[in-house]
Length: 304
Image (cartoon, rainbow, N blue to C red; front, top):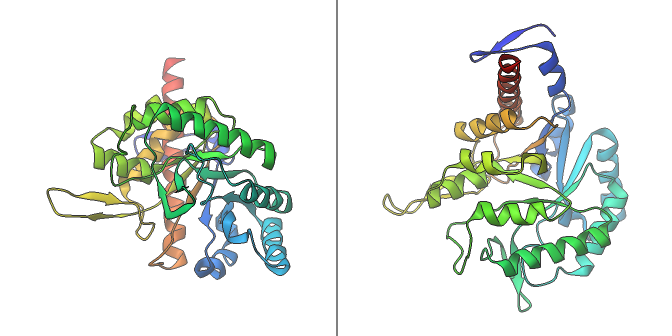
């Protein structure tokens, strides 16, 4: 592989070889299907929204199996409502279990959010109050998910436009408590992290530094937009815009902190650019993580 310069850091053959264990890819969307299938050689993984296939026909499931035979697949849930005192719907978990058995994904994931209460679906991945009650509820739901599906999900931090009322702890402490006491690990959404950091005035780099790095299994990248007026602006995570440069900086920071392989997925849900534009962002992510890993190797060499 040789030696090349990434920023001010040399990335040698050993580091470059280690990076090959990292996976980079895109979220599967019908609008992107043709572009993804035509460029499988440029990505390592595809993330599929599991709930889209809970009631799929036999032909649709067969098509998903075919996709999984061509490229690594992960399954991402959006309707379980793990972070809630309300128990997860066992029927949804049964459907997830059948889908996991059919697809044999690398892993499956869900959000640390609540989506229903009192039988009412709110239609949104809402951040719950960060309390001991929601921690206990999330851990019970994760235990149930592991028992029914067979493997625990990786859990994803969520973005929010309001600081959840009634909270007893900050987001970092709340997330750490759940991740530390569950078996699935963390899917760290870097744009969600950035949005909350900017909206509620904390340092996203410090957040990363204080996370249990060994528990981080995968990463989401996405884009958003500012809403509101100049005095009360909020960064909205809408998955309809390109990834910001600072999000790549956060990914680079992860690379400097973590030694194990990561799965990095770019999510896009609307205002779709060309597939080439999305693949360029995936390549940018590869480079950012490589820079971080090279920095870590450089520091270790200097210490030796």
